[in-house]
Length: 412
Image (tube, rainbow, N blue to C red; front, side):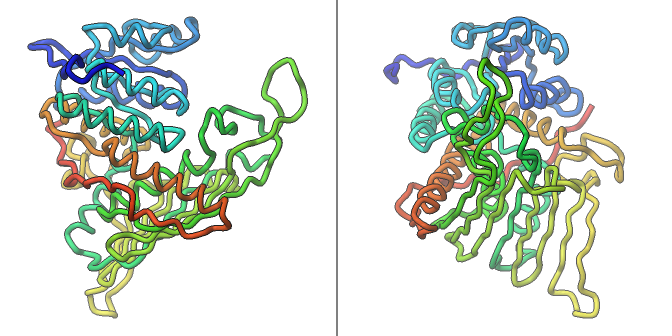
């Protein structure tokens, strides 16, 4: 590792746009590219340029760059980190590459935006967080892409909870359900191998659900118990010289219970074999003065119950989160005109650029990502020990930053 005294400080070119490099161009690369291509059209952000898209397949990355608005391409991310005209590195590569690329980028003085989960292992996550903390002292910013924090309805939910509209939160139910693996003949992918994915539904989608629990409540976990299960243990090889089946080495579904420092209890259920559920992140938050319901498949709506109203008037209120007064939405369309899943990525890039421009640590930080990673590791430990309760109190918990300023800049 490079000695700290020789590490570069944050690059802030006077009067020049920030140069952005993105590593990876598949599903997440497409979503992130959409955000980079559109953010400056709707939000006032520091000037930047989509400099270079990085991928291992020269032909594939060239085709993607032409579609997604990147000026040039590269096949070796290491050479890109050495360029003086690159100031931001957006990492959309698979999880097994996160630690190596992120640590190298931070040590090179590049601001880093990284897809979740932080890493494939707790040890990697700890090393990455240490690198991020050291880089932060030199003005180098880093963010983990827990994108659902930027869904306006969930940002509004956090505001209502922080304002005390729910009173004391007692318990939370979170369920993230998909069905893309419900068909047992669906072929193997890297996401079904532990060596490449780290875990299955646990790291892939439970990370989002867990982060939402901690984010909405501004809380930390003290204890966890969990269970994981793989329903289809062997799947057809997608390609290759050998026919036949391959062992699935990650979970299809996971269940966990969290005890929180506030005294609240959260239950989390995730599955990639929940037939009929396409991308349903459901969140229910229950306090002694009210409650909130949300489902990502209806992402423009928030259900809110005010239990302080007279009983004859109580009931869930449907809030259509499209007003200019709602988080992020001043920059978009007239009230009543809905936005989509992709807009949260635009909000994420907006927040990251503003943090760089203002010199303020963004959320969700690598510290936040590490808190989630500790819970994921504890779930695996608990599951291996017949759902034994795992104490997290000894773990260093992150300092939760104040809620991000979600009042949008004036839109174009």
